[in-house]
Amino acid sequence: MLTKYFLGHKKALIIGGVILAIVLTLFPMIYRTWAFGSDAWGLTVIALLDPEEVPWNPLDSNSLAIRPAAAYWLLTHSDWPYERCGKAMSAMDGCSQPLINFVGASLDTHDSGSIMRRRGYELLRHFAARGESVNDYYNGFAPVHEAVLYADIDYLRALLKLGADPGLPIDRPEKDFHGFDAFEFAAFLESRDQEVFRDVRRELEAW
Image (cartoon, rainbow, N blue to C red; front, side, top):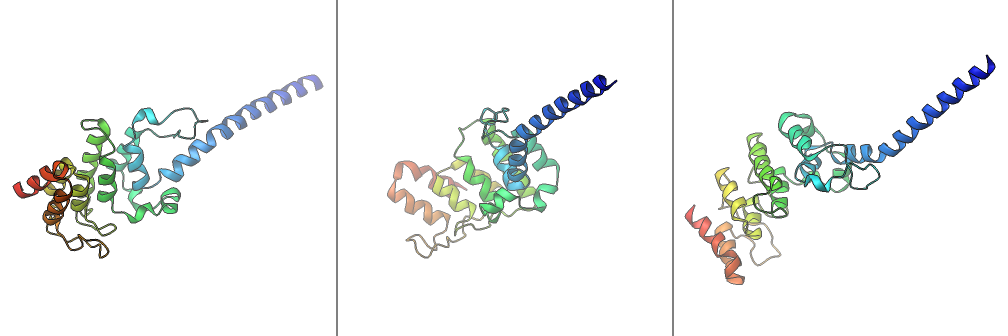
């Protein structure tokens, strides 16, 4: 009887130890996911990641308990990410950046035609449909100014279709281009690098 008790107790300790080891192994990945993906900004970052950059291995410091496709689904089907700023993004002051600007800044990091870039444009349209302004400023630039600066014609065209105002002035008093609208900014940049910015200016003028 006593032997059976000790065997049962030993089995319970082994099972408990295994469960504890699993919890301790998974905890960093789960905590990282919650800290980074508990708001719209963090979920946007995850949604625009290449799935191959998000390993399943919980021991990998880049692992997350959520896939990019799932992050995108949450952004487009739930209101809760927009109601808070999570721990990680608060620490980086990321939530001070308007979501349209936030997405736009990431678009030129992906190849044209990639699923991440297509998803980025889908998020632009989704955020605009939610009421996010396409004309909000961040560091003195509206999104249309950033599109010109990045020489990203696809982004510029998407913003204009969503109602961005190319006549807004840049608010950077310390810069030579302070007060320039998108047309003037494009012409200014073209004077510095004609090959890169010529098409940007033409796109604006055609609009």
